[in-house]
Image (cartoon, rainbow, N blue to C red; front, side):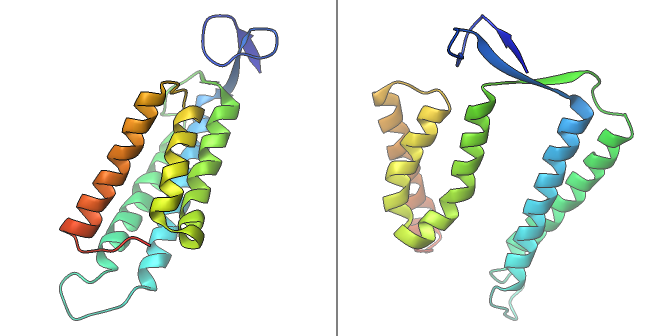
Length: 163
């Protein structure tokens, strides 16, 4: 791990924390994680109700999950064969990156336990702070936009109630 003194989240000595990783290794890890996410979509789609319609509830997640797995695994091969960008990937604020990933992973579980709207009112501002947004007005507007879009797109347009 290296430190710099230009901007962003700093350590206790005022230096920016930067994590350096070989780009091919970093890409392979990211694309394996994306392939695992695609597999999760496919498994979830298999558990959805089946119908005789051209598109049943599991069609979209099945197509997206399968496509994500295929593209991700192809990119892993490209990365590991040395055809990706050479050099190192630098991750500034690695603790913020890990924290955001954990928040993203916890979001669906929290929705199941507490409901979409109750979780989103807390989760969006916390994720915004982790991402570096500091303006209370911007955080409030961002939260309202996410809630508004969920209501309009899912509940009103698609007729899909959120938990």
